[in-house]
Length: 291
Length: 248
Image (tube, rainbow over all chains, first blue to last red; front, side, top):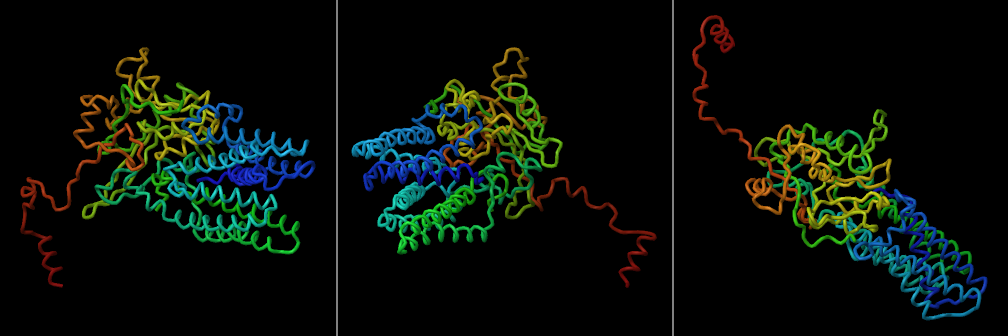
C-alpha cells in the first residue's frame, strides 16, 4: 500500500492524543486550572491535528459530513462518530477541570470509553480488509490500542503504566511483524486463483495492460526492499519502544520524559510507515508484483 | 444505506471468454470512449502526451503466460473490469453511501455527488476494479453501461455494454445470470465458467470461461501419412553432394 503521509500522521498522532485523553478521563491524573488546560491542549492538538491530516487525503473534503451517514456498515463512518463524540465529551470534562476544578467522574469514564472506541474503529478500518492479508488479524486492533494507551501513559507522565504498556505493545509489534511476513502466502490468494488459470499450469504475468503507472499501481503496489524494511523495523523498535523504556529509568524526570515522548513518536511514525509500505494488496498479483 | 441487498431481481453481468479474447484492447478503448462522455465525471488522463502518461480506465486487459507441466506455454489475454459482486466489499466500507448495489439488476454504482474520494472502496476491492479519478477526486468504476442497456434512444443492438458491442472476437457476453436459460447462464454452464479469487468471498456475478484444451506435441493429424516426402531417393547433383558429404 502507498504510505501516504497524511494517514501515517493521522493514525500515529490521533492514537497518542486519544490515549492521553483516556488516562485523563479515567482520572489517573486530575490536573486543574492551567495544568489541565495544557494537558487537554496537547491531547486535542494531537487528536484533532491527526483527524485534520486524514481529511487531506480525501478527494472531496468539503463533503466530509456525509461520512457520518453509514455507521451501520462502515468502520470509517463509525470512526467519524466515535471521534467526534469522544472529543465533545472530553471537552466538557476538560472544561470542568480547567474552569471549576471539578472532576465529573462518570463523564470522564464515558469519554475514556469513547476515546478507546475511536482508536478501535480506526484500527478496524484496516483489519476488515480481506484484500490485505497482513492487516487482517486481531493483532492489528490490539497493537493500535496498546500503542495508544502506552503512548498516552507516556504523555500523561504515568511512568509505571508506561513501563507496563510499552513492553506489551513491543511484544504485540513483534508478533504482528512475524505473522505478517507469511500472511499473504497463507491467505490462499495467488496468481492462480486471481486468474483462475491454475488448472492449466503455472501462470505468470506476461504483459501489463499498459506501459505506464495507474491509480492501482501507485496506491496498492508499493514494494519495499527486504533489507531496507529490516533496518527500518530495527529503527522503529529501538526508537518507539526500547529507548523510551530506558529513558523512563533516568533520574531527570521531565527531560527524560520529553525525550521519551519524542523518541516514541519518531519510532511509531517509522512503524506506521512500514504498516502501509509493507502491506501487500492482492491486486498486486494481477500486475505480477507479489512473487 | 450501504447495506447490500439480500437478493437482487436480476443479476446483470458479463461472461468473458479467455479462449476467444485476442488481446486487441478494443474493449478498453470503447469503454473509455463511451464512459468519458456519458454517465458521471469524465475519465481523465494526466500528461497523455508527456513522459509519464497515466489515466483512469474502467476496463483493462492483462496478458498472462501459463506453463502446463508437459506442454508448450500458453498466452492468455485477460480483460478485467468490475465483476458486480453479490457480496461486494466495496459497497459496505463506503462511509457516505455513495457506493451502492441496485436491487433491480445488481449493478454496483457510485453516486459521484456523495463520494468524498476516501479511496476505501478501492482498498476493499481485490480485483482493482475501482480507480480514483485524479482530476475529479471521485471514484470511477464500470457501470455495466447502465446508460446504454436501458437507453431507448439507441438501436436495440446497441443496448449492451460498449465493451461487448465492440469486441471483434465475440469474447464478451452480456446478460442476466439470475436466469439459467439466458445466453450467459448457458455459456457459463456449458464451458465451466469460473469466479476470480473465490476465496475472497465476494461472489462475483461476472464469469470467466477457461481457455479450451490445446493440441499437444506428438499428437498427429489423421492426414499426416499423406504428408510423407514423395521422393525418398535423391538424384543428380544433390545426390552426388549428399554422397560426397557423407564420405567426408
